[in-house]
Amino acid sequence: MPIRQLSDTMINQIAAGEVIERPASVVKELVENALDAGASRVEIATAGGGLSLIRVVDDGSGIAIDELMLAVSRHCTSKLSTDIHDIRSLGFRGEALPSIGSVARLAIRSRTPSSDAAAEVSVEGGHLSAVKPAAANRGTSVEVRDLFFATPARLKFMKGERAESSAISDVVKRIAIAFPSVRFTLSGTDRSTLDLPAADDTPEGRLRRIAQVMGSDFPENALAVDAVREDVALSGHISIPSYSRANALQQYAYVNGRPVRDKLIAGAIRGAFADVLPRDRHAVSVLFLTLDPALVDVNVHPAKADVRFRDPGLVRGLIVGAIKQALAAAGIRSATTGAAGLANAFRPGPATYGHPGPANGHRTYDPSFRASSGGFDTARSPYRPLDMGFGQGFGESVQAAFDAGPAVSADARAGIDAPDQSLLGAELGAARAQVHENYIVAQTHDSLVIVDQHAAHERLVYEALKEALHSRPMPAQMLLLPEIVDLPEEDAERLASHADTLSRFGLGIERFGPGAVAVRETPSMLGETDVGQLVRDLADEIADNDTVDTLKERLDRIAATMACHGSVRSGRLLKPEEMNALLRQMEATPGSGTCNHGRPTYIELKLADIERLFGRR
Image (cartoon, rainbow, N blue to C red; front, side, top):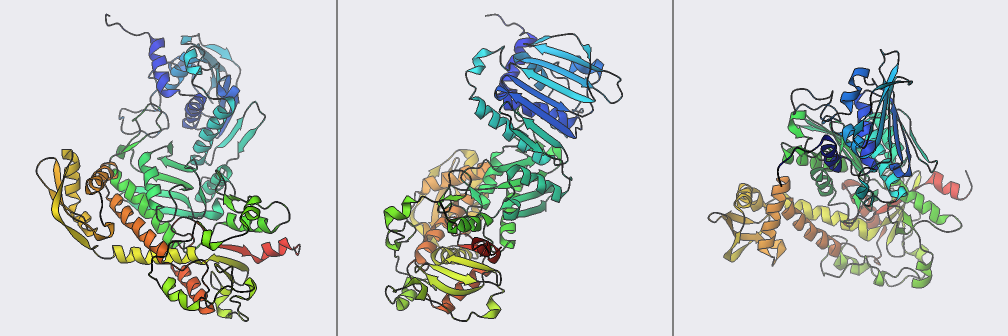
């Protein structure tokens, strides 16, 4: 077949396959254009999940009459200077409008502040109409009808109206967080409206916008993040560990104001929370990275959702370090949603606290649970650890002396008649009782605190083990015969460059000719391990993130297992002074609001909430 030049319509349709994946992609491109035009108000209306209609109206600077034809022509843009590396706008490729016009019926009506009249241009399946006069206010109105009518095969890949509408809503929310001073309104055929009023472009205003998008309980359960490293600035908010979600949909990341979905950023967040969240739970976060545009490539994909950093190790290290510092500085905190669930459990009627919910991280209670199981049985509890035969302060061997057998009444197990008044001002207060041989009830000046003794002590032991592990080089075991691992040359070179760091963790490696490394020592804590797989995993980790976190995470998981087996058991009686000692250690230990598995270690119920339960307020 001879080589021939493709038509402009076919070229635009090919581009549309990359830029316009679904209706939400159209909304993203049009809203970004409105923001680049300096809009302070953006109104979005949809019908049929965006397939029948998408209308975006803004009050921005508009498009001059003599530039309307250029606006719908391929590779025409007002946002890009002569330097492709100096991109300071959301859009810059000049592909969106011609791509949309090639697969849909597109109409653009615009008026600039200096113009006495508006003008309109339309594109239908790639065919342009002449510019004609129109009536309109200042700004631009873009209307897209019958999306993909010109490429009907694409319609087969669209989801239902509700799913497409949900994707559009998510796009608008992600963009709105980065522009708190802009008002966004989204309406659909189901008469639902998302209205995000404008806020001040300040940290406080940005947090109010985040609360509008993510819910009013997020600010109460969030920590501020603010760090700078080598001209790369990071700001935003992260959730406390006990406030988490079952998926990562509520993790928002921005690079120079651009919403992105970046694997490096997602991996850094996951790594920073690895010690305080289980693998199936995800932190809630809104992070803003600000850096020189020359240090990041946003032209990786036409959709502009992916970015590539010139120094990925620096960015990852900044995110992980800043999040861990924020978690450590926050001290001990429990999620406010836990107290709300506890209060609901006491109210008459169906309870709403117990098992984790499917998506929102809150808990729901199954009334059949207690009826079918006959109550809580520590011997059958999935959280009761195996007996490993060693103690850690409050461990099994130490606690055996206090095992006096089953008590007649839970209320009489470890009651304290007169609490130490000096302890009532502490964060977790003074211990008053131990109930059901697992829960410590404490009192502060204005609240009631319930502590899971096993979960709390598990965290304390884990932190102590980590400190011991990472404060000095780890013990290593010499292999009888060095194990030779064949690798691609670039992976072997990366491992060799990190040999000194790996040796601190007990892994001794050295180059062994081209494309291979010799492993002479492995960490004693790992015992018998698949050395080849370990080395390959490390090589992949370094290639992706320029770190050796894989080995550190393996050792930390072993420490977590040891902590679980070595901490105070459910079903053990504690003396009053032991309970108070546990509370004080929790207050002094960062991250002790959750155990190693991400479960909350305590719940605080304010006195005002208790009084409301009894109708006293």
